[in-house]
Length: 325
Image (cartoon, rainbow, N blue to C red):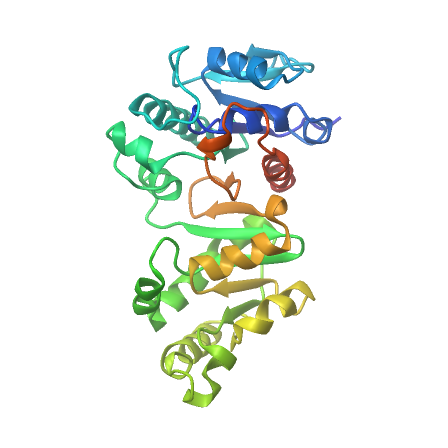
């Protein structure tokens, strides 16, 4: 029998819903059938979480090859006090989340886990703990000395690559130029075989209605996007477009393209989450290892109440397992 892939799973901010969705997902039979999830966080806090949400599960310390098939295994990292309040951002929570990420990176770089899966963190709590206000992706790039990283969403049969991430809409539009588009295509194609696409057919999303209608509704397609597609094709990449945003995602779902290169955050994320909010999985490319994440946040308002939905985390673990296998 083939050994199940070992996935390291950080619990995120301990005061958010991360601990409970990770525990609930790791306890599911369909998840445990395809991977061996190893949680990275405070063992005592996770045991308290099991009690708080009424989950029927046993949580034990991880002991390497001595697997605990009927229990959820934990690598200790980021201790928190027993009186840490649910739903409140704090320096303690930010520090615990940070330490779990560092431990996960170390395990992944040492080859002790097949991939890293992360639960949501709070940028505010990280900043309170003295770790700046950067997001998960930027922090992982810094910890691994990676010069670049890409965000890649999958849902149903749709795969979407982000050109820009956390910028205002105006900032995103102003930042787009021909070199950025070509560079993103090149970088994705360097690592696309890791997600099962050795020669991807890439559609570039247009910015303006009807792809600008020949300049009537904007000139970005004429001046930036079409030249970028032409340049990428000259370099041997299978790229098309710019394709109007109101049709490119539907065409990709039908199988016309393997990947849509979307220009800004809310277009890419909004389409994917509208198709299936709980089925959308985020993958970070460009790191020394694959990193997978849920597509939602810490949800401090419902943390510790046992009502958080773990389906997105379960789907994330299954996608991570499929790539590892």
